[in-house]
Length: 232
Image (cartoon, rainbow, N blue to C red; front, side):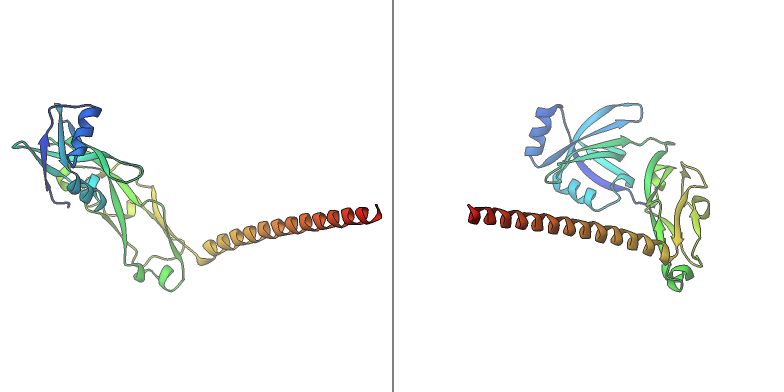
């Protein structure tokens, strides 16, 4: 399970675009903590710390104990905004966590023991991943770091459903019959690649033929103009 991480912050008295810009100029990221039946609280966190946490991965599945002005609040990130050009964090939304509450989070799926799957190791099949994450309804302090899918013994043609997976904690929000991955024979993907390459080659050939025809037409036109000039 993900460990609770400490996050230092400062309380903000002012809100709005102007106040947010002022916070960013000070090397901080404006944020808000909402939910839990309490009024929203505006805070600011260190820019370097926020950027490190976001880009480290698993940010939205991490429970934080936020220390703002001597007040400790447990919260989980719900959303964040990045500058479209620089990628610098612009704002973070935190959901306040209260006792007995569950949250819905997207937990990454990790596939293990691929070398123990005969369909891949001996059969040359390919693992086709349908879902890279699964949405779980889970207590904030029990959020898994990842959901592991064991590929041991898997053969070509096998389809792995949610019902085949052990969910570490919480409840999957979809259907147990939802596919997570399947193992396809090498000819399936190979045929798709060959068809795509053939289509590209055909298009290139047609384009080359068209360019050649245009060049010949231009050359023929130039020759006719030359003849007309000599006759004149």
